[in-house]
Length: 71
Image 1: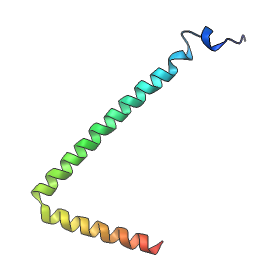
Image 2 (image 1 turned 60 degrees about the horizontal axis):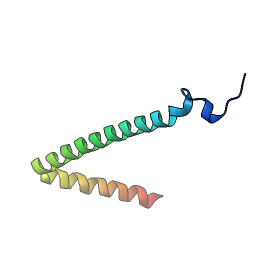
Image 3 (image 1 turned 180 degrees about the vertical axis):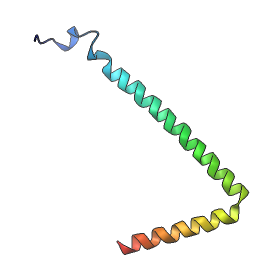
């Protein structure tokens, strides 16, 4: 097996960093679109049922408070 310098390996792993960066950017864009979709759904729910949303937030806050207090 012959060792090569980094500059000699033109078609091999030289583009690995670019490929990983492209994949990471694609996943980040996908996650951003998903989070925006979730936020749109939450906003629509709160506009349609504000009372239910307030009660759900109060209940979640109470449960989180109880869990934190126990620790």
